Each structure stands twice: as structure tokens, then as C-alpha cells.
Length: 137
Image (cartoon, rainbow, N blue to C red; front, side, top):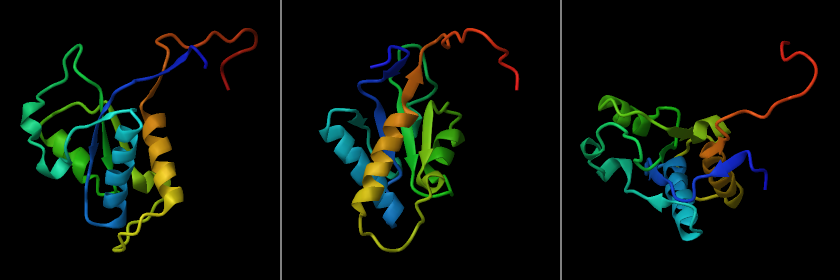
């Protein structure tokens, strides 16, 4: 594994939990990541009292908000209380379209899981040094 990349072992995940296919996909992806030990589920946006979070402080757990569609309802709820979002993912940005069907497509589920992990991946504090040549383009 490249030492310049580190994944938070446990990250709090907030799925949007809507009733459409993409909302249900956020729930299934988070559930599977929890079962795999890659994160912790911290409620759904619909039933979580966001006021308890206040503002991020040093040492507070990292979290990701996973929105199902481009309306970004979950993100807006956090922004409404002036809470800084550390990580955010919208399934719309992955090209997954919102439909009224609730069937989970295995390929989309894996894509969402991979995207959550990728979104929560940090590069080292100091970027790698590139020797030679100009960095300008």
C-alpha cells in the first residue's frame, strides 16, 4: 500500500435514506460497508437530530454525507445548521439516475461502496515531491 494514502478506519456515514432507488442504494451501501468494518452507521438523515453535532472540533470523528440524488437534501440539512461537511458524495455525480424503482443493481451498489471509500481517502499532508520539469501547464 502506498504510504501517501490513508483511509480512515472508521468513518461515520449518513445515508440520505430516500424511498427512490438511489436513496435505498445509499442505505444498502452504508450497511455493507459497516458489515465489512469500514465505517459506522450514524443514523439516517431523516431521523437524526443534526443539532447535536454543532461544529466540528479537533478530534471529532470524520463523517460522510451520502446523497442519493442531485437535490442534495442531506447536504442541505447539514448546511442549514452551519455544520462543516468533511466529505460528501452524491450518487447523481456517479451517473446513477433516480427512478421510482427500488431494485438494487449489484454493479451500482459496488460503485457506490467504492465511491464512498474513495471520497474518504486522504492524501498525505504533504504532497509527493516530483523531481525535474516544471509543474506549470
